[in-house]
Each structure stands twice: as structure tokens, then as C-alpha cells.
Image (cartoon, rainbow, N blue to C red; front, side, top):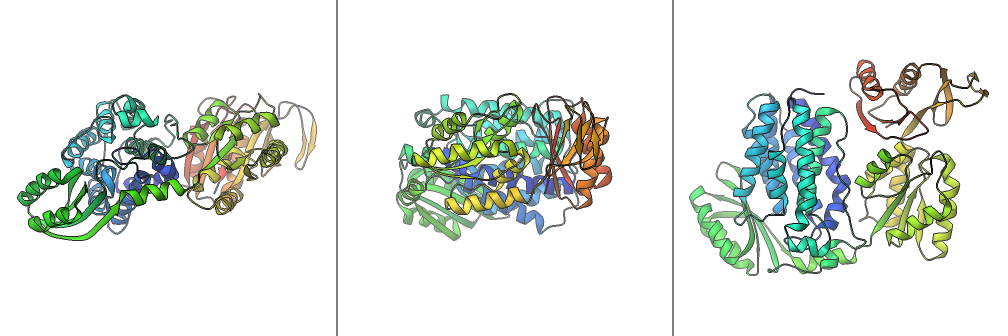
Length: 521
């Protein structure tokens, strides 16, 4: 648990934000209904944060405030779409409030400042959008420690996100939450993860089989999105805002640097929008997108669904948060073939990736896949032998890829993840490392017993040391229902002592059969 973020911690957040938004990109694109149903909000946010991360990577900031300032400038320069512009202002608010390290008072003030700047960046603020979620995050940023404040901000933002359909008719009609707001919740969850070292659960969102954008089928009131960088004075920019507001909507203007602005608007008259920029100063890097082209491309993209078997409520929640359809096991037993087949059918998708997540479920998964294929589905089983391999596969899933390419990428990610688990022996048995007795703790790596002991943590530490011995950049720990209190924290502390450069993420998986499951990449 960090008490404050220094420049290096801000770098970790920046990288984590890009990765997590990339994971959620297709989901957020599919939610995109307002202000135009063009299926690009997730992609725009990824582009915006990549620009922020690149600016930070090219700099050597002395502290968190300087690091956040680099991110804010990079985001403003590379911002795409309304949500990208607004996120750049939230980063600017955090930078403005942070003079040294990003501590509890700074983050409270920064979220408030960011929410304020975000509203002033758009000419006509609308409730039920990312602006509402940003203000809720700021209002909910309460607590005694930095970790409490950020976790509470994430939870408040997520609650506000779930209410957005009641505030915006377009969302209610499509049956989705606001896409930009979802992106902001993901961004803040990455921040909370950086500070606390654990995942803050966020509510799964309903993503229709067809993207909400394609189903909604509307291009808003204007035909084109125009965006450009502009060299101009602040006074000229004020005049430009009014001129663009007369031409269209979704007008947003943010400062990139001294005398440089990023300009965005939806219009019918592209020439007039560019001419307004010329009257204000010197526009360059001009981009024009026809919404009808974007919507046609979105409608032509097929949907790939993922079905995963997940023992335990916590694990089910983790997969559902990534947009995965989940089949829960029946206690210690795998689900039935019919239950898996029903889950495949329930996706409504023709193309389905199936993750068994346990060796004993593989046969069930293959039988269900075979029956689904006979009914016209295109189903591939990625042979994940552990939930951690399933999570690794989900991290690289991209429904915009060709189905076969996506399956290959997911299979490669799963195969590259070593998995280990602890379990309790039920009977006397001969293992590769000796005879175990009932009640012994068994440590397994890649399904082979490598350690027998009586103490849960002692065996866990031995297994962790073996995994670290062959190298580990990222370690994921799933804490089961029967694990002793603070098991995750103690394993994390052990890893930090032995391998301080290994990133460790702890999830409360709640799985019933293994007190601890570990994945290493």
C-alpha cells in the first residue's frame, strides 16, 4: 500500500492504464452510443493514454507532479474524441494539484480540479456522460489514506456509471452505460491497483452481441467529426468555441502547451469548421471522419464471445468484469456439458472461445464445443489448465481480430503462463517428492507436486521461490476461500523481499478447491 506516488509510481500507473484500457477497448467501443454511435470510444481512450505514456517515457520528471504534467501534455496532444479530451483534463487537474509526490490531499484536490477542467473543456456539458462519472469520483474521494481515497473514488465512479442510462435517453434506449464513463472507471481502477497492489472490483457491464453502436444505428445530428491542432491566442480560442458551437455540437478545446490547442467538433460543414480555425490562428494536423463510414465498419465487424469456467464467486466476478460469459463449477465438481453448452448458446455469438481453466474440465469443454459446432457455432477451446492461464488469455483477447488469429494469440498467452497451486491432501498417496498424508499441504507447479508440508504459508513460499528462480516479470495470486487471513499480503511481501522488480497482483478469487493459485509470466 503506497502512501504517495512518486515519479516511478506514476510511470507504473501510466503503463497499467494503457494495458487495462487495451483489455477493455473492444468492450468500451461496443458501448459507444453517445454522442455518436461510431464504436470508437475505447480506441480513442487507448490512443490518448498511449500518447500520455509516450510523453512520460520520453521525459525524466523529478517527482510525481512533473510526471503527471508530462502525461497531461501528451494526452492533450494525442487526444481523440470527446472522452480523450476529457481524460486529458482530468490528468491536467491531477498535475495542477501535485507539486511533489501525489499524496492523499493532492489526489483529492486533483480529482476535483480535473472534474472542473473537464466541464470547461466542452462547450455544452451533458449529464449521464464521463463528466458525471468524473464528478462522482471527485465527490467520493474520501478516506484517511491514499488507498482508501482512491478505492472510494473508483467505487463512487462505478456507481455513477451504472446510473448513466437513467440520465441519458440514448443510453437507456440501447440498454448500455456510458462508454466514456466506463473508460474513466477503468483508468481510475488502474490507479487504485497501482496504489493498493490489489484489484478494486468494478461492476461488469452489459455488452450486446452486436455493438450498441451498430444496434443503435444513428450518427447523431451531424455528419462529420473534425479535429485539428491550432496555434492561437486564448482570446481567439474563445471566439472559435462560439463559432464551432454555431456550426455543430460536441465542441471541445483543450490546451496542449503555450499557445497550442487541440480542437474537436461534430459538424456538417467541414470547410466552415476549418475556416473557423484559420480565422483563429494556424490549424494543422487536420483530421476529418465521416460518421457513416465508421458506423458501416462497426456494423461489419463480427462479435467474438468468450466463455470461461470459473470456480468461486470471486473468480467469476474477475472474468465477468472483462466481459466474459462465465460458467461456475458445481462445488468441487466441473460443470456439466449441458451447462457449458447453454452458456455458449446464451452468448448469441457465432464465434466463441472456450476457456476450461482446469485440466479436469477440458473433456467437458471439448464435448460442449463439439455439440455447439454441430449446431452451427464456430467454437475453439483454448487449453487453459488454470484460472491464471485463463486471465492471461483474456488479457490479449481482441474481438476485432480474425477469429483464428485471436484464438492463437490467446493460446500463446496461456501457454506462456506457468501455473502453481496449493491444495490439501485428502488421502495418503505417493507423489514425485514422497508420500503425503491426509491434511498435508501440497504445492504443485504445472500440475506436478513439488513440495509437501504442514504449513500453508511455508509451502506457498517454497513454491513462489521455485517460480521466481526461473524468472518472473509478473505474478498473479488468486486467494481461495479456505486460505488463512492475510495470505495474499504475506505472499506479496515475500515476493518483494526476494524479487523486488516482480509485479505482484492479488485477487480474492474465492475458489473452493485451492487455497492459493499462482500464475507467472
